Length: 276
Image (cartoon, rainbow, N blue to C red; front, side, top):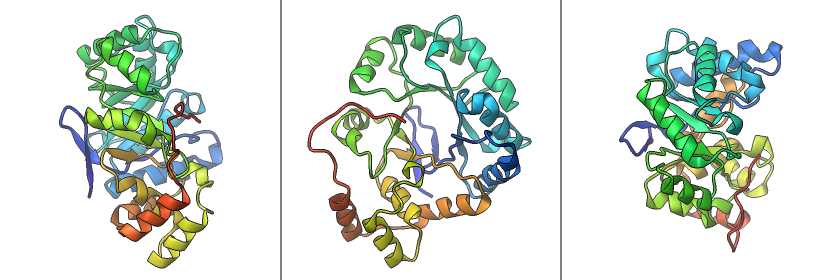
């Protein structure tokens, strides 16, 4: 299985499990928990969640799914920007830990940038590391200038940047992605199939048909082909998570990659980082 290495040397499988929109509908809870458990059984040990998702209910879903299996999981959660201060970050982190039913996070992220100075957030994150509540920290949705400011504010320990990146959102290749690559900081790619909106694209469906796989597997395999990129698709069912896992075994040809590049080209000029 392909692995991703964080700056401190910790490695995780290059495909994770996302939880955005989990916990929102009670009738789906059993299926969502089963999907997360199946993902762990298949080796997808990184699970990403956030206090924002379903107002904390996604964290509770994750907590139920990992009960008795904490040692198998690399857990990531995210804090609202308004909670990224000295006063609020520990309280937010402890609330996430309570919902998850654990005593520490493997990674804690600033969900996006708000009005609180990045230097204050860095100090608050490092305080959580010192307290043993988190092992490492990172950010989400920060563009190049934000990352430069973060490092200048003492944030050299930043372990990842979680960004919107997929075949239809290739702007990071002209912006923050090269900056992160030059510093060996991997990215976590959220919405890797754009909530399914990518899957009807002709190039994806044609290549999928030629390989006898799904269009989603091709979209994920395109991301997995790149170094330092960790997609975190959400799967709400056991069948869906198995389909995602199979993307790790798909090897796109150079011709496939050229066709995908031509069908979904990278922007010619840099632009602002996109968010969902």
